[in-house]
Length: 251
Image (cartoon, rainbow, N blue to C red; front, side, top):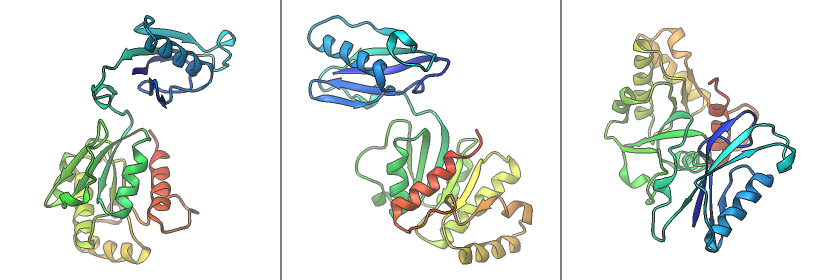
């Protein structure tokens, strides 16, 4: 198998550094941008699999000579993967916004599944080990079992977007309180989203005011979550709406 990775870029290009694909006798998995760039990369990899040589890195100007009009430059790195070698361990950690997901229920599972293909570094927290999938998390992800999930808030990466959707309202409330206390101290969370209805949020808001949080503080919490106009209560539909909201956050 040959692992092809975007190692460097300059100017306008179809994929970011870290994008990858594997080329094996049985087929191709992943993509480094499509078009003639990918066609040539696949041809090089297949030639190497047939016994030919393999350059470590190849420079591709994306101009008329390659039949692509992006105008930038892509460097692709080629690497042989031995039989039995763990490909996941060779992949670069995902770049992008840190996303803290509290809850591994139906919607949390759907969010995590879709997030695998997005530029997000997931920190997934739940108090129940059995709720996490059996397979290991994607490279660059962190999966944490925490008896009191609110305690994990203090260790979240700066700039994290936080999604709160645990298995009960009391736990959700404690996590929201921990997030707002962290905002008082550091103001370094990019987003605090709480799953639930407007009725749930009205109840939480009243309790937050009793706890001494001012309006300017509790207004940092978004509830309900998800981009407006997306109807449906299926976990996958909610996940798409919520992740679109996260991806739309300012960098």
